[in-house]
Amino acid sequence: MDEQLRFFADNGYLVLQDALTDEEVSAANDAIEADRTAYPERWEPGPVASGHLAVGCDAPELLHRTEALDRFVQHPSIVPLVDSILGPGAKLSGLTYLIRESCLVQPPGDLDDGEPLGLTRVWHREDSGNIEGAEMNEFFAPALQAIIYLDDVDEETHCFSIIPESAETKRQLPKSKAGSNGWGAEGCLRIDDSEDGYLDPKRPKWVDAFGQELTRRSGGVNIHSPAGSAVVLNNSSWHCGTIRHTQRRRRTLHVRYRQPEPVASRHGLKSPWESVAQFTAALPSRLGMGKV
Ligand SMILES: O=C(O)CCC(=O)C(=O)O
Image 1 (cartoon, rainbow, N blue to C red):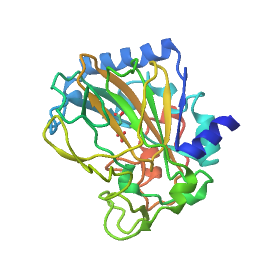
Image 2 (spheres, rainbow, N blue to C red; image 1 turned 135 degrees about the vertical axis):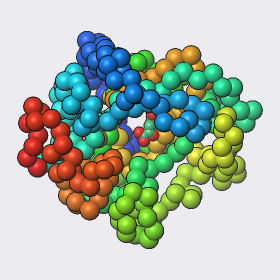
Image 3 (cartoon, helix red, strand yellow; image 1 turned 180 degrees about the horizontal axis):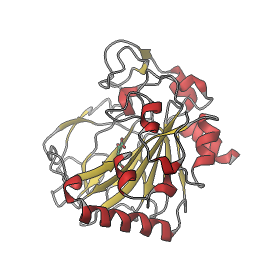
Image 4 (cartoon, helix red, strand yellow; image 1 turned 60 degrees about the vertical axis):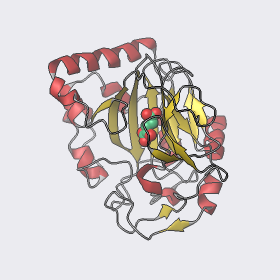
């Protein structure tokens, strides 16, 4: 674990190979197929802004419809790491099952980072770089996300990408409380590098396969790993989904954790939850997580 924690401190993420067994991967995917059959209206994709189809369902609702994902809320491969990084008292703050469908749009002539099949990449720090609460742990992590691969992921599928960045770098980067983080926490402390962070200075703009003008950022790492792997990331690291021209779909489970404090920070929580306490109270009682 020490080596894993050192890697996390130096890079802002780590990959857990074999976090889940094959049986657990199949159980999760089978349960979601059953849920899609029973509740097709809950799995309708929203407006397709970019031309790439993705559909997801969130906890608590998803956990009220199926018990099959219960084991992933506090998975023994992931929770010890979460506790070591965020400290005692860290709570689940979100869980999303996401399906990124196959996409046969042609890549643009101008490739991003030489990616032959790359269609789009929307680089971001989660919640616009909100780092409220990060100083509560030595890893400068305001929240963690475990992205569990439920399909094999390689250079011919969609994948998760991240820019390695240490806790120390995050501490040193310019911060601002000005403006909104787009998520209601007015005046929250944010890493203030959305304009220039890791931007390719020579060619800062990139037009993706869908005609959207995006930023071209350098230094990213593509996480290619088999089904059952989990990427655990500092939610305030730059990351994105690398969407590729592919016949294959990619299914993932995104499990988010943070400390209940500071309450005003909604980092790691989705709408309509205003606090970890509210989110926890809405979870099924069978999970025994009612006390915060
Ligand atoms: O789909 C992915 O691999 C990444 C999704 C993402 O950017 C996020 O969870 O914020």
